[in-house]
Length: 169
Image 1 (cartoon, rainbow, N blue to C red):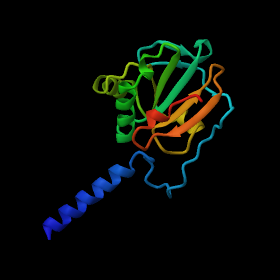
Image 2: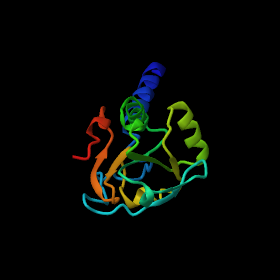
Image 3: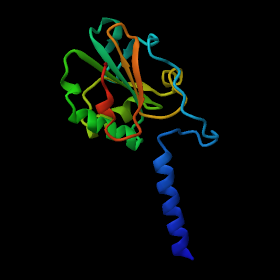
């Protein structure tokens, strides 16, 4: 009987961790993923302060931009950063990459940067003020912007090799 309870608890924990990146709100009746910004629309946020105190102004950044909305506890987010690190995108001087940690603070983002070798600016979004303007749930979210900060494409990074889909064509 005890072994059965342990097995049931383990199976439940695995199922919860697989679905965990969708939302942190247990009372939500699991609505469909919604994206609140579409192709051609201008990204609303242009000025940020990263966790090191540096100001990032997207209006002053030439070229394309990649915005990653993520959480440090999410396995899909971790995989996305591993894929990003293995890609040529992190070394592209014509591309600005910015990562916004949903419900994260400077301490959790600093630790994440160290553990996952993140070199792009990290922005804390502790109260989900930024994230909630672009989506209802689902992380990581990748928003590709052109040189004028208009959306070219949005992606939900819950599948492997999501970085391969990051193209501005």
